[in-house]
Length: 626
Image 1 (cartoon, rainbow, N blue to C red):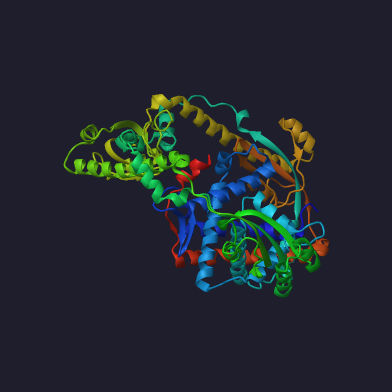
Image 2: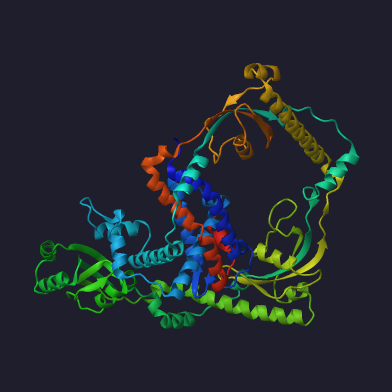
């Protein structure tokens, strides 16, 4: 058998389950997330749970690294986005946010002991002896870009979500009659004889004349219609429009530095080591021995604990349970036993590098950059107010631009997708997608309100819709050749389908298949054994049709470039007893699939309860990931 019992039992349900989940995601509004305007720092909000753009980017890049491990480093971020990976990650994070909101509402939590047990039992963190290795734990986290605190929080969140999922799935039972029926249904295989009928091999129809082709163009208007276009006038207020006018005095720079000196200081560092133990009593004995001045290595060996050199660390790099007392102790101190999800820690403060304040000269360039950025934002805001006042007083965009030293940029013939006639995006304007959206969201001769666009440090724009060219059929003379080609292709396709039906009837009656092939000039191939769920070169409709036939009967199905004819050669039934050795495993997979099918209604209900919201456009995130 080329399929496992688990695959047989779940392939049928997978089709149903996938549809349920897609419906659920649609109910959450995931499809709209790429089309709404930016509003807040968070991308997704469910109740009190927020998912930031940074979290979405990190999750996407993590998935990209995983895919590169499978398909090679040549896979780019743009490729992954084209394959739908970004949308998939966004949907996954939406589902996680829903479950997090439900966990908070239900007051579901995970104990430190449960987190510790899961982490210490993870094969990725054990040494050659099979025991949990703190050193290996730290190395694995560092190589994957995690801080310990972040990893523990993520693990606790995953466990909490899993607990909710398990409570929803419940004790689902897979009855033997269902198991055996699905095995027989999905396990049956069929072998067929097949050959293609190519549309390109059909006679090319003569040119039918303009009347027929014009009617064809009208019937397929969507293909031959030029989209609506608009002429827009845009007045951007960009950082570069005011940056050259800003000067900062040395006194202002020094004043800013004094107010923000802590931001430029080198944070305090401490060199720490620790001995990690499983229980408090052993940790207390270790702390007492170290306080007496005994060597940490010897004490760790006697106690069965693990001595780890944490090196030089800053406060934010540690869990609060360790960081707070470690950064409050004196040099050389041995801290009392401290508990975290990983166990009991005895921390030794080996050395201290106090916080070092930066001198103004060494950070002057950074200070100047920060001060100018603030002044640019302030100046832009003041300029936007002056522009709004001018427009409100009746001045045109052109007059207002001239008065305030700005530009009025004309964009003609742009579509709602933000493309010009040559397929390019408009040049010289910031955030073209937002500008075009505003221009298409208002009536002719309407001036938009002052609108912000994203960026560093960002800016504003006003857009006027000057003219609207409605969507219309392209002139017939311009598309005649394309219409003729498409009309001929459609006729040849129809001829191939009709010919395939004719040949299928003849193949079913043929006593000698080889003689039939020779007489009709076709090359007949024998298919491999096909399951109902087989996905290969053959059309899915053809495979489904073969499972309705008796041996010797034939069928045909349209294909992208013609049609395919097939005659059923052999039926290979399956006996559930063939899977006796792996039946329990298959039942577990089936129970899991049945449990998963309950998640659709559950998540839809959560989305309604917690009012999932999209707060920020992901357009900028997608652009940054390219």
